[in-house]
Length: 346
Image (cartoon, rainbow, N blue to C red):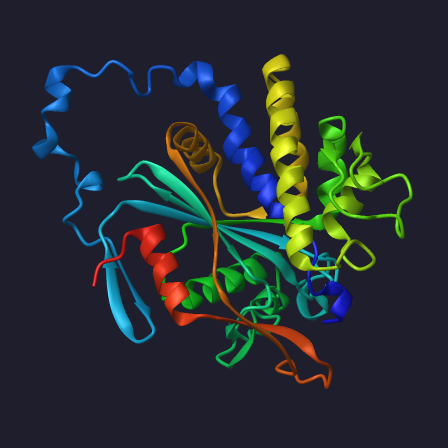
């Protein structure tokens, strides 16, 4: 894993926001009666007759964080979105297969009891236990490595994704994850093209890379510029990843607005774009799950995107004699974040 592959692109966040924030527009007509805005007095008083799925006195899951056990009673669905680079050989089969690095990992947490949702963005350099499975999908060995390397192991793209899901689950105390969606960063130009370009005000100095992207100017990004804007870090501004993350967030917000406008004008826009992404994606999330998620995201409260605090340093855990970035999450930050996401109880 070379340094140039250390921190790349927030591909999946764009996809996650698109699928969750845009798909519902196409389905709105057939979902009008799913939940009525006019509740009767009788419905309002039946609090003691809540279905089991929404009772808060039923233990629905357990996690173990820093040696302590916690439970949660809310009905929650959790999905992992994975953005990968081009370092592996995913088109091969058998012993020739090699997974890629999961450069971006985003956990979507949907609380059906509270009717809210939130995202947890995980640092790809987070040090955690990784299962070193072989190309046959088996193996018991583990090592403490960067979270991104979990996708490197396995004999198929699905196995690499499943190994990544396992690593994230263990990092978060054994939290159950209901599905995954993986997409390669190569799809950014296609996404930008699908909406006819995204208009942003350039936040950093790109003069060393692209003279047409002047800081402070407002332009509609071409497909190439979109890739540069959300991907490049070295030679841009202060070269800090935090600055790049701000640009990525800005791009995603504008992308969503543009996609929503187009979907309201063309009923087939969402279907066409989904089909385009479907060919490039690897997922175990069914169409039915996607429809339900889109509907819930439409109605639920958005609690935003969370991240873990921690310490970053250089280390050689990979054993290749080269210094690589290692992120060690703060234990209390992990606990506090999980309590906020899952309403954990001791």
